[in-house]
Amino acid sequence: MKKIMLIFGTRPEAIKMCPLVRELRCREGTEVSVCVTGQHRDMLKRVLEAFGVIPDYDLSIMREGQDLFDITVNILSRIKTVLSEAAPDIVLVHGDTSTAFAAALDCFYARIDVGHIEAGLRTYDLASPYPEEFNRQAISVISKYNFAPTEAARNNLLREGRESESVFVTGNTAIDALSTTVRADFRHPLLEWAGGSRVVLLTAHRRENLGEPMRNIFHAIRRVVEQRSDVRVIYPVHPNPEIRAMARQILGGCDRIRLSEPLDVIDFHNFLSRSFMVLTDSGGIQEEAPALGKPVLVMRDTTERGEGVSSGTLKLVGTAEESVYRHFCRLLDNAEEYDAMARASNPYGDGHAAERIADILCDKMK
Ligand code: UD1
Ligand code: UDP
Image (cartoon, rainbow, N blue to C red):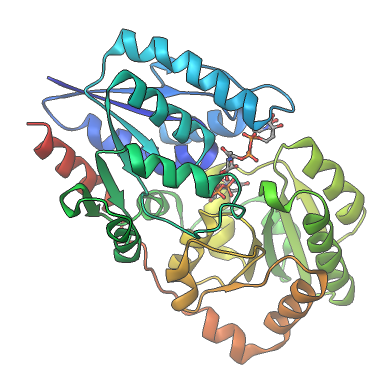
């Protein structure tokens, strides 16, 4: 019996790892365990509940106002005990968070094989996204199996010298998750509130956007909404206290902007599928929106999701107030431009990525 452990700790990792947990648990000849670091608390718990995944280990490391040192040190020291107790043959980590990096480093020290889900995404700019670009490059140095969502991600890994036998193109498990969450009969009081208005879904949380860039973004959005009475913005605000304070200060007190708690993943995916457009600095939403044909203005200087830009659904607009304002207005006012971006295209797979990853792992671990 081969032992596979999945380690994750934040909301986006959970959304993309839970489909894989469920798939691996259906396979014979493997013993599957889940360790959550608890880098996120409520946001993580809600995803686990939505997918019915109960962790075997919960390191509960989250503290108010945690910084990168706290997260990395706490995870690094606590996973050591879990690894020696569970003695997995392989550990799977996801993407580019501090959880993924610290868990992979633990495995390297403990001489345990690592499989990297969503491998090969790159901006090649260590400052953007920060610190995620470092995390994912470092994990690639350690991992034995690299599960790339697309050919472009695979090519990045090959260019960096990874053995071609270690890289597998599988699609992204985000699409697997999407196919279980979006429902035709979905209703929600916030959508009722939006009524016949054009709904713009907003998220913003990136570390490199904290402070001035986020202030610019929020001011641009407020200006646009105040000038257009048929637009309503729904913003599920990340729990980071710095973001909350700024969102309240700049976007609060406007009738057509609703600041809410983070939405459950089922709600969020259904909001996405009913929105007019999306404003975000998120990574995962850049994968989900193209599949649903929702134009996205990406409020960052770089993106590792070039496939969505090439397919026309994503536009990289940076964080300068005038740029966000101008692109937002254009998308609202120019139907031709909107239609060109709103053509659904899905560069991220067919919703069977978890099956492919499980097939490969079971084969390699025979
Ligand atoms: C982390 C990831 C980022 C990912 C994001 C998803 C790293 C370095 N970054 O960033 O790649 O895009 O998660 O959301 O791993 N907090 C709460 N409650 C929660 C979650 C967070 O209060 O449920 C607070 C934390 O205490 C902290 C702040 O929010 O003060 C930031 O959380 P943290 O995990 O440090 O980083 P994220 O910005 O969420
Ligand atoms: N998401 C969610 N509720 C929200 C906002 C986002 O469930 O209120 C989901 C979203 O559908 C996507 C993931 O969380 O799957 C993205 O997380 P986030 O933007 O926090 O992180 P990133 O993808 O940038 O790492």
